Image (cartoon, rainbow, N blue to C red; front, side, top):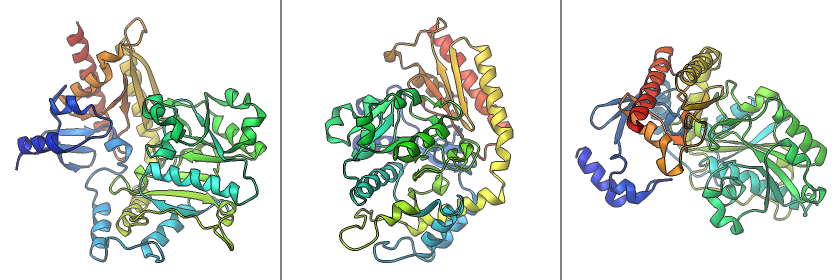
Length: 433
């Protein structure tokens, strides 16, 4: 078996996410890379070419690929058992992981953990819990949600219905949860009282929106939102699927503004990017509403809930955070990213704006006049493909290049990342001219 075989089989049988399959099968704009191995922040394709994993394998990888501590923990657990049912049974790794996650927050705050499979299901759990909570506490009229324009919360039907990106959900809108979208705090505070009276919870990606081309929220906005929710009896759901586990410079984005949500949705970096797993953390008062006689239980679950392998990986990732003092090393790396972004902005007029929140950054490309490139030009996609020639894998959101490497990236590797971006932008300008 070789590259040609794998690509042929892929084109004949596979269906990729967010992909124009007709173009993919035709090898447009380029044949796929077949990624076969990784080491640290580097990935290697089936032809032996190496690339920096510039978007952390879709925002998941934290400590680098093939990390010895991660590998050892998964291997050790595999020698015992890979997975056992969590329905009617407990397992050691899930117990340990839940305890350690809760310990990352103040006592009597986020006290319970519900495990699921991915970020979308973590959000799905939170919104279903939020509704059931209201139904079981005599607040049956509060069954709607407030979300933010251009937000993204996953692709399962419930989670997707909260998203504010029309391309992902407009055709399914009538099947989803009732939701009011607002652009920011001013818009939220201007909502009619009748809307607020029907609202169970507000959901937000704290500090920075990911799929919205890496747009940070104003400083202090999250604290203000927490205060607004408290004043109106509305729960706060934080979607930290992307921002959690060090991405913004602290373990969780909400900790940057000392905010504790009622529901916290985690995935992606939960296992260091090694295995699919998610968690929905809730305050004790939310959990208590599901206790007692009658049909009060939360009837929701997945076959692989609390996978022992996934829990082992997550525990190992938390160990690496401590052993390698990952968070303490981030300020220097954040500054290096900031400098690299500023240098690109100063060098190229097509770099319209750079946006950064900790180790999350976006580089928006526009015409030198400031006008957006035509959508059909797919400029960001083309620059991302050109970056491969220079040893960098990343992905654009429209014409914003995403810079979101594993937290383990070194200074010399950050330099390589920006050299590759510089070369790709230059190559594109030469192509256009």
